Figure 1 (cartoon, rainbow, N blue to C red):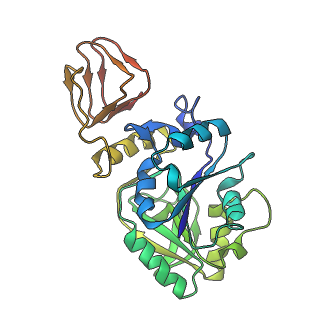
Figure 2: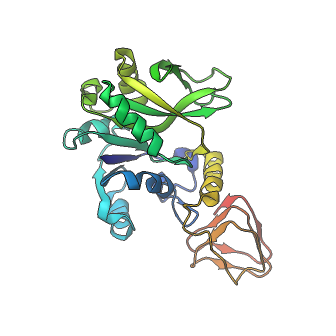
Figure 3: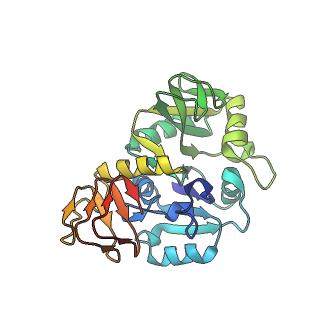
Length: 287
C-alpha cells in the first residue's frame, strides 16, 4: 500500500505565515504541520507521494533534509490540478490501494481500524472508502449522507446540527480510476466521490477523534494543541534555561532570541530567528 499527501494548497487563509512558505511547511511545534498526520500514515505504507505545487526549489530543499526522505517521492505540479487531478495522474503509475490524505488535516486517531475496514469494504466491491469524522455542528463543513456504512451523497455547507463529515483521508482501490473525469483539473470532493456514491461503490468508516483543518489561523491554533498534546509529538521534553517563566507545552527554535523576563506558553511555537523582546508575554500562538 502507498499513500499520497495533497500538499498543493496556496494557504491564502494563513497569511502572513504563508508569505514565504507553502502551507504544509508552516512550522508547528518544531516541524512542518503535515508531519503529525504523516506519522499516523507512515506505519501502514511503504511509500508516500507528496503532491506539491508552488516553488519546486522549496520542496527539493525539504526533501533533502526530511527525516522521512527514504520513503518520500515528490510529484510536483507545474500548475495546480485540484485535489483530484494529481491523484488521477498518480494512479496512472501507482497501483492501488492508495491512501489519500489532505495535507492540512491534523488528526489524533489510530488509523488501523479504518484501514482494516477499508480492506473488507474492497472485498465487497467498494472502490473507495472515506474516513468520516463526527462534529457537533456540520454547517461549516458540509456533510456525508450515510446509510449504514454506505455513502449515499453529500450535503452542502450551511445545514446545521451534528453529523458526519469527510475527514480528509480516503482509500482508493482497483477500479477507482473509472470515476475520475478525463479533464486535467478536478476535485475529489465535488466530482470523484459523488460519482462513486451515485454508483454505490463508496463507503465510510465512522471515527470520533480530535482533529483540525489547519487551513485557517483558528484551525492552525487548534491543530497546535492537538499536536502538542499527542504522544507522537517528538518535542514533549522540550525545555529551555533561557526562559525565566514558561508553561509547557511549547517549542522555541534554537535560532530564536528570547529576552529577559519573557513569559511563554502554553501552546506556543516560536520558529526560525524570531526575537521576543524583554518582558514579552506569549501564549496560544505561532510566531
